[in-house]
Length: 434
Ligand code: SF4
Ligand code: SF4
Image 1 (cartoon, helix red, strand yellow):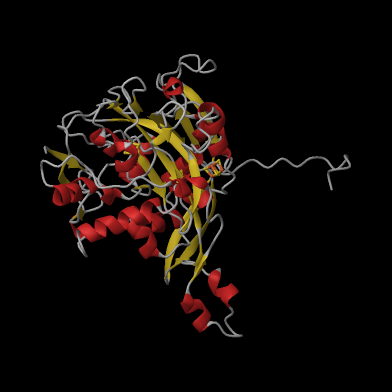
Image 2 (cartoon, rainbow, N blue to C red):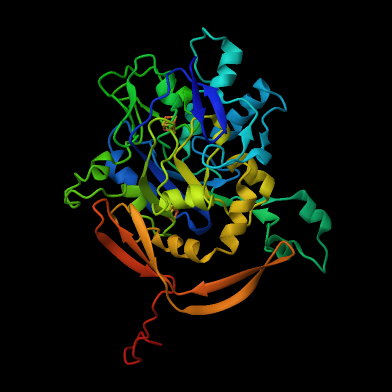
């Protein structure tokens, strides 16, 4: 197998195809801290793409409650166990060797799904990635475990009249009783396992935006993609006997949606987000290195590479997913580290006390349907300053009412918004003005 460079892992890894990169890459950032699990994103995708016969169980976008929820059930714990069995005790990071955009999280010393398959099946093996096909029962409930919280046994032991469980459970920086919502869709990976596994070469990655698609004509429904995708995002359709997956709403990305008038627009799930947790965009790729080309004023680049506040989901799987998450600040760190890698602690600290620019950029989420390619900030007045208590330290924080301005692909202003939302007080002359 050829060696390709995976910057999430900070090293080369084996992959069945030679390294090749798109000019631009579809990418997104989700702020987990803000999600309310309203499932508006889920339903907007469903009502656009998967409402037909044979697609009943297909949820290309889903929002699950962690740690118990998952769609399909146990998709991640099952694969994590398989990787651990392939490399017992070896799935570890060396975070001390962080080094710029080519190694932002340090070095992953463990095995990816491709490397574990090589160990298990040998270099000439037919399976290029380890994985499994979920059974029918696993696909049955799209929101299994919703709102089910973890309560540490420890909490019960320590609980007393002076320190009841409920008070412990709500104390930051880490709640002892917790859950969080994880928003999931296809990550349009840089090294897609679905593509690697397809014996028909029916899956391809588009040069213009890195979106990964299944050619419905070529697919014969062998379900090798379902087995290999570590995120379990390709789904088999019994009525047509081929597999389907998220298409990144590519007509909208291309500016061909009837309402877009040629401008690249965000996907349906992104634009519907009630909690304003989603920001989707296109990042420029350096075709020689495969790294993101320096584009500091692109908000996705800024959040991922400059502030490193948004982290990939299970980077250790090895597909270099293009979805990034701002981790939830109340969740015990060991759980988050195994899910988002070693960058978790620094990311949460930044989120708790954001700097001036970061706070402004966080306002860009979900304000408009057009894709934001660049932002600028106009400085506003200082509102207040204070110290934020974080793990026994005081972090200085100053709030400025800056205005952030978003620009489209052509450099035209799309919208501007301020850090402080304007307050409108209605005159008390209507019956509902009380
Ligand atoms: S998330 Fe799964 S289906 Fe999507 S590109 Fe990656 S490997 Fe393929
Ligand atoms: S629409 Fe937004 S807030 Fe609602 S579930 Fe989806 S990601 Fe969460």
